[in-house]
Structure formats: structure tokens, C-alpha cells
View 1 (cartoon, rainbow, N blue to C red):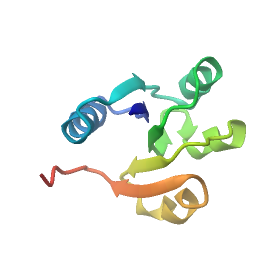
View 2 (tube, rainbow, N blue to C red):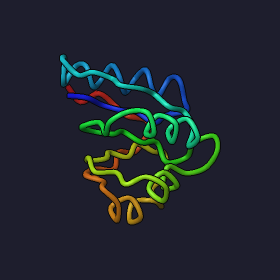
View 3 (spheres, rainbow, N blue to C red):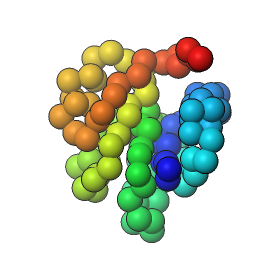
View 4 (cartoon, rainbow, N blue to C red):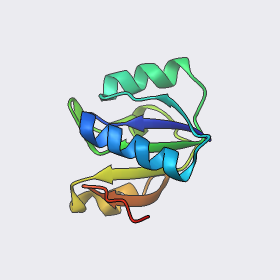
Amino acid sequence: MRILILEDEEQALLRLQKMIFKVIPDAVILGTPSSIEEAMAWFQNNPMPELIFMDIQLADGTSFQVFNRIKITCPVIFTTAYENYALQAFKVNSVDYLLKPLMKTM
């Protein structure tokens, strides 16, 4: 599975990658943009991934700004420390909303 991860916290990114590879050993992490601008550059130069994990609060804004500029056609899983964005998340291609810190349940 081809996966993109938008995350600006290094420890959260490493934990998420570890969890992904445990569940999907053959996953390919296509990129890890840490800002809206990096994400926009990534989308302009790459085909749509099969799945996106998105932190909501990034260094230069919220990941919802990406949806205003790019048509996201794959499922999105939001990973955030904020409960108050859940309704907004499900109005876009969100299939899940995970609250940080992400914990291993396996």
C-alpha cells in the first residue's frame, strides 16, 4: 500500500510509521511532508497515494487547507491531539479520526 504521512512532530511520525509497518509490512511510505507548503509541492509532483495519514495542526496551518487546494481522492485518516475537528474531518475523505498519543493495541 502506498501511503503519505503529513506530520510535523518527529516522534509522532516515527511512532506512526512503526505502527503502519507492523500492520502493513509491505507498506511504502511515499513521503512525510511536515507543512502545508511541503504537502502542496508533494501533490503537484506525485500521483495520489492509496492512503493518507494527516495531522491536523501543522507548522503553517491546518491540513484542511490542503483540501481547499487539491482534490484528495483517496481515504484519509486524521491523527491529532484535538477532538474539536472531528466533524470537519468527516466532511472530507476521512475514514477515521485517531487521537494522539497513538497507542499500540496489539
